Length: 194
Image (cartoon, rainbow, N blue to C red; front, side, top):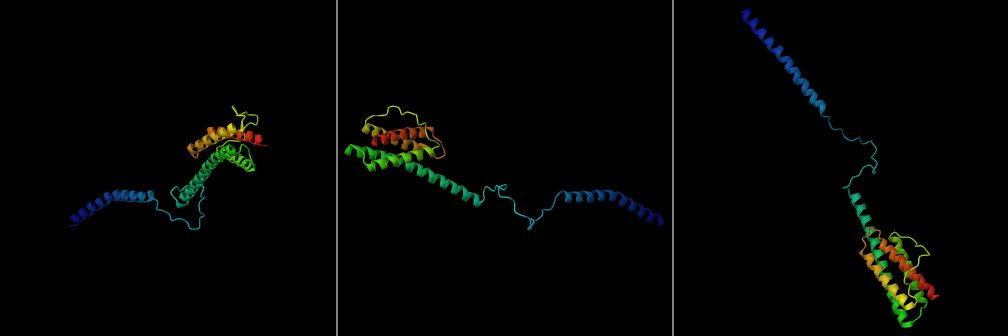
């Protein structure tokens, strides 16, 4: 009987010895997998917030509101720019009509010419232009005041159309050039009125 018990114990030991390396491999693999997946760490409440310039959260409500505000301001400036061009055209038309009836400039016309010049400069500057060469000569400047006024009104009307057709984020050399020509004619007209 001891032989049977001895044989049973030996086979049991043999099986245990054979299963031990397998069990060791399984435990090692399981432990390695748990180390490979780091557990998420909660945010540190004592840590200082990150600099907002490096954190570009494009979908944030603050960024959307800021973008809308900027677009609204650009639209407002553009509308004011177009309104100035319309006023330039209206003033030029009024000057032509006033001169037709009186055949002379009065102080109100002088103020309108000054306003016309100021608005035209503002249009030119908003379009990205600057003061033209003072020696630049306007081609085909009519000598007669009535014809000169008519030419000013035509150029003011063309300027208005150009400004209205130009998108708000575009620098237009044509608008700048037209404004400079109109400024030259207005200055010539003001010189005649003195």
